[in-house]
Image 1 (cartoon, rainbow, N blue to C red):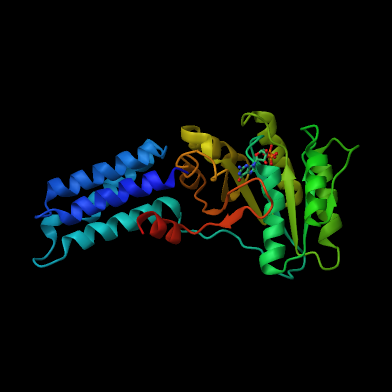
Image 2: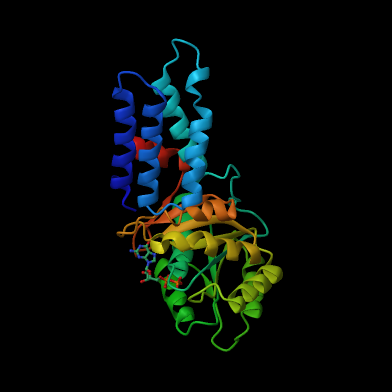
Length: 300
Ligand code: GDP
C-alpha cells in the first residue's frame, strides 16, 4: 500500500488541527475532510469514508465539551477509534489450536491470480514455523491446469504434506478425500484447503465453493484479495460472502505499488478481520495483521 502517503496525509491533518490557535468547527471540519480525502486517494470505498467522517463528527461534539477539555486530544482519539473501527469488525476470527483433534480445516477462496495458492502455503508454513503446528495442504482446485503442480511443488519446497489428484475432476470429492486423509492422520492439526478461482466471481465458482464448504465443513473460510483490487473489492467480497461463510481476509501483494485501501473494504463487506497481509512472493513473506498496531504505525 502507498502507506507512507496515507500516513503522511493523516498525520499532516492531525498536526494542522493540533497547531490551530482555537479548535472550532471549521478546524474540525478541515481535519476530517483532509483525512477523508487521504482515505479516498488510498482507494477506500466512498461509503466507508463517509461513515468514518460522520462518526468522527458525531463523537466530537465541540459545543457539548466542558470548558478546559483538551479538544485536540478528543479529536485525535476519535480519529484513532474510527480508523480502527474501519479495519476491525469487532469480531475475532477463528484461530486454529495447536494439537487439536480432529485437525482444524481452513479453506481459502478468492479470484484467480489473487495469490490464493501462494498464501495457502504461506499460511501453513507460518503456523508450523512460528507456532509449531503440523499442517497439511489439500488442492481442491481442479479448474486451473497447473494449480495442482504449483501447490504440490510449493508444498514440497516447504516440506508440508500434500494431497491432490491428477485424475479426479470433482473438486468436492478431492476436498473431502484430502480432508479425510489428514483429519485422521496422527499429528496433523491443521488442514489448509486451496479451492478453485476464476477471473470473476461467476456463478459456477460460487456454486462450487458452496458445495466444497458443505462437504468439508471448514472451521474457517479465508478470503484472499489482491491489494490492487481497488473499488471492486466490496462487491466481490460480498459475492463470496453470500456463498461461503467468510470469517477472515488476507490481503496479498502489499509489497507492490497498490494503494491497498480498496481491499480493506472486504472487512466491511464480510464483517471479518484482516488476519495477515502478503508482502512478497516467497513463503515467509506473510505478516500477521492487527488493526490496532496498523493504525498506530499509520499515525506513529
Ligand atoms: P492464485 O491464482 O490466486 O492461486 O494465485 P497464485 O498464488 O498463483 O499467485 C499469483 C501471483 O501472485 C504469483 O506470481 C505469486 O508469486 C504472486 N503473489 C502472491 N502473493 C504475493 C505477495 O504477497 N506479493 C507479491 N509480490 N506477489 C505475490
